[in-house]
Structures are given as structure tokens and as C-alpha cells.
Image (tube, rainbow, N blue to C red; front, side):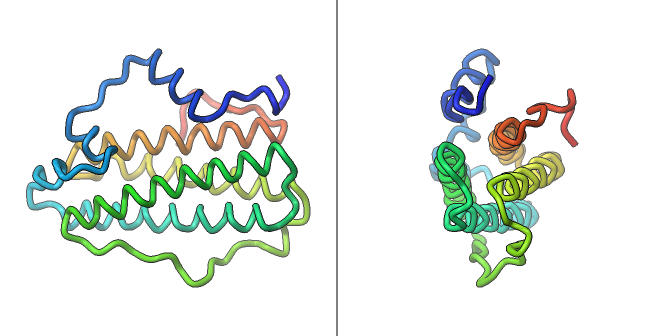
Length: 189
């Protein structure tokens, strides 16, 4: 299978969810849709959940900046450039959702940093940029995996797990683009 034959991430997600039988609770759907119903479920443990969400938001903002760097580097050629812009769009959607949820829980969302410590001097080819992006996505998978059990509000855990799935797909697609086995193991850590 060539890189050009990879299904669009939204299509891959739709196919997976359609086959998985995954059912989200009403509150998780409300969270994913950005509705106010979730805030009503706050049981007083919102401060810890807000802190976790803000950490996730910070990572999403970093990913947005990283994909912007990659897109502006002139090192990515199509279709890798299109893929990077698509993934950046996913991270923007995650960030918007997280920020709205933090506000609904009474918190203040973190802002993007003025600068990020990206290894710019090491990005000399398309492969370098893709490998950097893959490492960020792998880190996001691990971070969300660690965050899911920490939420007091279990609906937030379900929503974070949904984002985790998207990050894992990004990582797999980027590994494939690099010529690596897209899913190297039966479990992620």
C-alpha cells in the first residue's frame, strides 16, 4: 500500500467507529459537541479535571505550532503537506473543545506559548519533519493514556479516550508515511 492509498483520517475514524459498536454516554457526546450539559455534571472535583484538561490543551497548542512549523518549513511535499494541515486541523478542534470545556468547568484555559523549543536545526528533510510529528503524536497518545483514568468525571475520561484514538491514528499514519510498521505493537503505552 502506498502513502497515497491511506484513507483520509476522518474516513478511517468513521469506518472504525461504525465497526466498533462504540457508544458514548450522553454527557460524553455533549462534551464532544461542546454543549453545556457537561458542566452540570460537575461534582466538585472540577479543579483536578480542569488541571488535566489544561495540560492536554497545552499539548494540543504545542502540536498546532509544530504542524505550523512543518507546513511553513517548505520541506513537506504533497500529500504529506496536506496530511500535516489536516492533522493540525484536528489538533485545533481538540484545543477548541478543551478550552470550552475548561471554561464550562469554571477554569481559565492556558494560552499558547510565545515560543516552543522545537528542534528546528534538526529538521532538514521531509522525513525529519514527519519523524518529529510522529514523535509528538506518540507522546500525545501516552499523555492521553495516562490522563484517562485520572479524571473524576468519567465522561471526561471517555472524551479524552476519543481524542487518544485520533492521536493514535495520526501516529500510525505518520509511521506508515515514514515506511515504518504503522502499528508496531498490540498495545500502546
